[in-house]
Length: 232
Image (cartoon, rainbow, N blue to C red):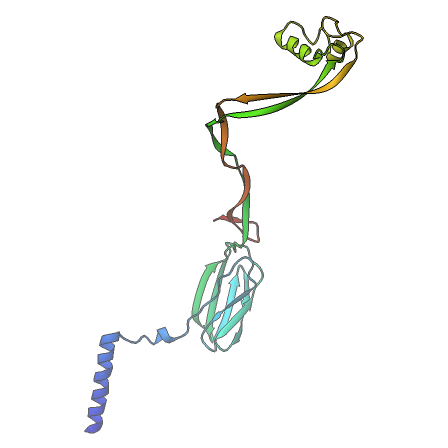
């Protein structure tokens, strides 16, 4: 009578646990067939399987058998192109225990870059110069006899249009003593003439650079060992 009560009590407890946590799925506790992802560079398929199981991998028309240690298996395969279908089957004796079908994938590992050129960016601004003075130095040819600045005379006439360079080159101009030949056969010497000038505040238009021109490498994707490229 006591044994009956114990048995009934145990059954009641099991039913209570089952009602709270749901039924126990015995098959869920059984190890399933697992496998690592196969890429076009993979040479070994590894995974877990039920103890005492034989594993076969079929790729195309060829089948490869596994080496099993405890609940782990390892199958050596040749490198296979991406997109090729493969099937892994696990047998318990002659009975098919589990099956897994997938396709070989690309393994995108090598980063791919492209060279991008960025143009200079900026804007125009009017800048106040403020008051400033500056000194200028000119090397001139001067007549040592009368002190005439022959360089200034030549350039002034050219600028005014009263004479042209085609009319007389600068060297011929010096040899002939100027436009009016007044300094012919005189000694011509080199002199440095300094000129100072002061300027009031002026506005000048200047280009202000916001971004320097540059060349950069940007990542655009990754490349598989077969040469296929996938964008990032």
